[in-house]
Image 1 (spheres, chains in turn green, brown):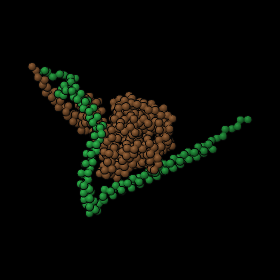
Image 2 (image 1 turned 180 degrees about the vertical axis):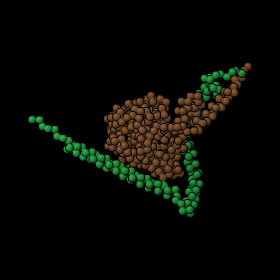
Image 3 (image 1 turned 60 degrees about the vertical axis):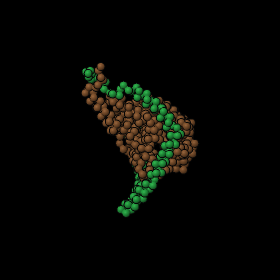
Image 4 (image 1 turned 135 degrees about the horizontal axis):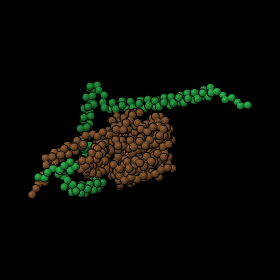
Amino acid sequence: MPESKGDGAKPFDPFEPFRGVRDAYLDAMSKSMIDAVNSESYAQATGAMLDYCLTASAPFREALDKAMMQALMQLSLPSRQEVAALAERFTNVEMRLDDLDAKADRMLHAMAELSEARSAGKEAKQAPVAPKHK
Amino acid sequence: MQAAVPSLEQALAFQERIRTFSRVVTSKAAIAQTPKELVWALNKARLYRYVPVVGSQRRHRVPLLLVFALMNRPYILDLRPGHSFVEFMIGHGFDVYLLDWGSPGFEDRNLKFDDYAVEYLPRAVRKVKAISGSEVFSLLGWCIGAILTTIYAAMRPHEGMRNLLLLTAPLDFSKREELTFARWTDAKYFDVDKVLAAFGNMPGEMIDYGAKALKPVDNYITNYCKLWDNLDSPRAVEAWAAMNTWVTDKVPMAGAAYRQLIVELYRNNALMRGSLHIRNQRVELQRIEANLLDVIAEGDHITPPCQSEAILDKVSSADKEIFRVPGGHIGIMAGSGAHRTTWPHIEHWLASRSD
């Protein structure tokens, strides 16, 4: 058995001898699969599969929704739609608050500018007038 | 004859390799590390300002607002320390802001491009201007973010936008034979209303599958082989882990916005045809006058180059440029060569237009 090599030697990887073959195979598969997914038949197949899954699950989803609505009503709890509607109203209130915040910012900015202009005006008035030379 | 039997040390090292591989694939990397502060929020949207590292005297006067897609996390722009577009730009004296759209819930299923482009984005811009003290700003939109920023630029051309940067912008859907997504979402095959009736929003898992299915072998097999082959390189592992963290952080897309994307854009090409209406107002691309940099990824399979070229003929900007970069949809900004190609070009272009 050969002695193990010191630090810096390449670690043992049983897949190393096959790397070239692997890469060539994956390259070929990649090109082939890209062509496949770009085809009309793939689009048709995935569309059909999705449609089938949604159609098949629809009755179960509807039954679950109905049962959930009834359970929530009996527990006097809001439904998903009701909570969502409340959240939408919160967002509208948030927007109004944001607009008010922006208006307040503009007012404060205008007041600050006015205050600066007044201070500058006062300083100009109080500055000593240079004597006239005869 | 000696058999190639590994030593005990080699076997243990191989076992450790498998453990490392497993750990990297299943854990989250530390990403989005550039210091920032939250400066504004609305619903799920968050506006962040990155802490400047250059003194105000040496900083560019015009702030930069980054807008990414609706269905992915925006920290792709700040992936990891030492390899972050945000870090690069603030290091070059830009005042950088990031708009994070957040993750829409069931209550956001009716949000459309109208809401994002003319309600959320203008408010974020207003905040950027208030904080920066500048009446003009630069806007960078990437992927779906480029659609939103383009719509905003056309709807509100006089709100101070000086520079508009579009990265891999899916704006022109006329060459349908070159668009795989257009084929998959054709009305013959894809009932978008049925999907949205079932889920409300478009699930992040389905969006993720759609993006990965464009190159299934590369995304589901080769990607992991690359990690295995480079496990001995800490830098390569770090880069892989950061990207994997981002890719696996899936975000749904608001149902109504997704419907607009499929029906009005992918199927009808309404934006380029001039028939897209936002808040009952036609989006007229010729109203865009801001300086325009259109960055195209030549190897982009998600947004092929043909989708981003026609915009230059539609806008009224006097200063406009196409910059073609070798690379993919995400790679041109987050890949290993981005700091040598895309970032310096963006920085250089923007620097001369930001004072």
